[in-house]
Image (cartoon, rainbow, N blue to C red; front, side, top):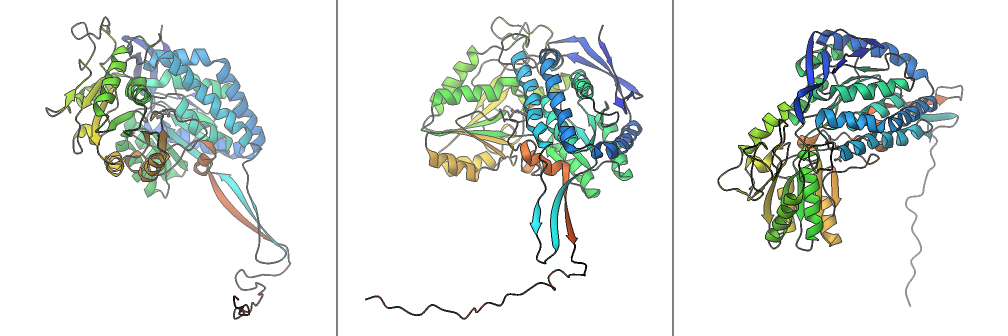
Length: 517
Ligand code: UN1
């Protein structure tokens, strides 16, 4: 029997107006959870509940909130295998990667549990005597967090953990197709003792969520929006929050370039391209988009990548495989559309294309009913091709060539995204020139485009985001607002810039001339 899952608002199950079946993409006939979907009114009501609960939560001393984060980390650690198995079952992420994803929640908790004892403000000297200046970080209020399902628990933790630590309440809207994983994570968070209403989980479709968010922003019950998903939806959320004088934390798509210089270790580069292009079936926002290869090593690199890919296993994600199925039917359909972007001037160098079936098997693997697809390497992509310019979420990597590093940087930036990037070289000058020129928020040297660590700033520019950064100390600026305080204890009105003591210099002073012998 599959699970029944409902939204939880203020500690109670909230009404649903529709249902959604979250299925196992390796066996789409299997329902992992039947999910009750809420409507826009319920979303707005959840934000009001959160706003109410936030007032008390903000009064809990930050070090005590830090202890709650510590407990969340322990609970996630103690339930790591169960949570990872659920992630594998629900979105088809290979189990080893799912365990890594769960580990990332623990890493995030480890970082922020100590932040409860820091959350530093400053004491600042005043320009006048008997006056003191201070800065404080205040929680923003309620954060509405809308997340994708390709990282159904790790990426949400990047928002939830710091938001809660900073004294905010949260309304979390996870992806429907990853609802069971999200609900399990929600249970672990509440088991740590969060008061009712401080963290609320709300399942809803995109249209109801958007309408609910619009209403809540109008009612003044949402003060920060966090969104991970497509550039298209991110743009709409950015517009909406902009109208309400807010700037959302947007983590959007990527067309992540990998530059391979003539002095690169080509075996290492092929291994990195394999993992970042086809691990997670190419469904990370940091997945490799286009390999930009120096013309002198193009053939040698492509030959290595194709060989490595042929030896890699696509299959049952509970086993030891490079890639499992695509996340969900919606993603499989979209991926099939990306395959139509392959043009006559392209060369598919990897073998068969499309869904893995009995008639189109991958070696001995016929995919059964699962949403499995052949990994594809397309050589000869050019600027202007859709395959070169647009994100193609799924197992497809383009290859193009360049002659000079300047040209490589230009090609890397051309699609207008800016999330992740990578360069393989043995020359420090090339690595730093690339770092300086590339538009991405993340740069890897001799490493793949994916695999950010949980305590570095994560986020993009251009079509990948509005410059907001998650993770580490940088995310504190998303979930707190600086408040400046001045305290004058002189007993008189001292006017800034006017009642300031002046020390008069002699600016005409010059050293006496000395002559060299
Ligand atoms: C995402 O796909 O939304 O760096 C994030 C990485 C992961 C995060 C990916 N740690 O690949």
